[in-house]
Length: 142
Image (cartoon, rainbow, N blue to C red):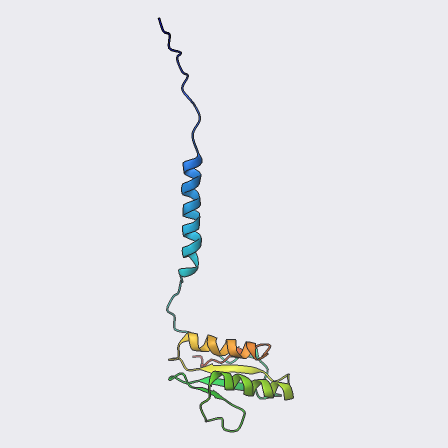
């Protein structure tokens, strides 16, 4: 008669499928993480005047953005003339070549998108502006 050997149960767990699933999930999360943007709509507060930026010796160069997204700069041929963002950066770069200690400030309308302000900051950074301040509306407390 033919005898069958009894097999002992295998006590191992095959983890290869679990590793495959984990790697697929990792790839999915890595691909989708940069696409997720978190943001909260906020109304920026008004500030009391502060001495964080001392502009008493040298008046700052002010790059402005109005509600329609038009750019202006406080120096140059005509401060009231709208300009392109690249032209604003070029004018400010020329002024900083003459006087590198003059502060540069951005004055944006409350109705302009945050993206427009960041775009102007990027143009100024690429033009060699070492630091940029953001202007706020003066708030009279009490």
